[in-house]
Image 1 (cartoon, rainbow, N blue to C red):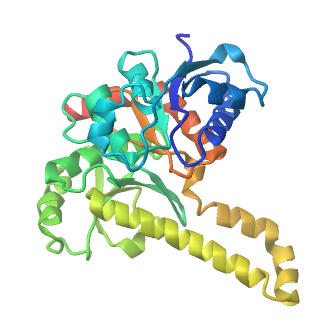
Image 2 (cartoon, rainbow, N blue to C red; image 1 turned 120 degrees about the vertical axis):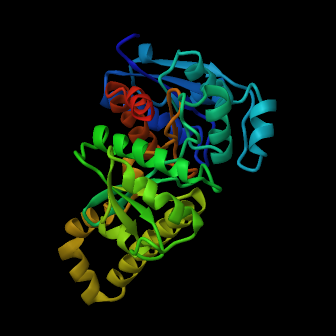
Length: 333
């Protein structure tokens, strides 16, 4: 199994578990022969779903877990007390070196707590950020942090800028990622105390391509590749992004179905429009990595379907191949 990318999947996490989780795992297995998957959760339910598919049974192992961490469970207490939960047992596979990566569509809080307390941080990392890829007009950007650290320090943001740059360079092939800090204006003297303290520190970093401040309205245009902010700001940006995209897609569909004229027009542009609207869907890039963990922890959307789980698994391959964690260690040393 040495040549495999071994992924521990929380099969009971998320709104559509275990059906869509198992389906996504099988799609990833059938798409790439270098993947081995541990499906962790209620054994009978997982095996029932597996029976629907054809796949290489040598590359799947089901590990029974009797408990589930629910979204409403207090994260710290849930991780401590629910030792036989699918989330905790899957994380221990990474901690013990049996798996290279962990993926879950379950509780964000439990994933962040478990990632830090069970798997542990890379030496030198102060706080691991959640870093989702968000679509832009020119491609996509990495948003760090979007949910890990609501209260942040300037030193956190500097580390996130460095780790985000490595991720975008080596995972997504962007040679010299542009780094910007979210602000209420472009002038250096603007912003709250955190931004004012962090800006000059980022400016002094010789190992990142810092381009200054970015206002929220510039983010969708692709003005920066790595967008740095505390998790309060980042989560607001992410949720507004998702809500706006869903609203726009709904309005376009509503307009196309309004009358005979618009329906004819819709038929003429359907293929191109479908392609363009798909580019607004962040789920095509997989889940959000919790960067700075000893291993790889990926948080998928709670509503994740098979396609997002599939893409989340596939993104783990390059993370392992590129030795991202070793590069982060070198950068922070």
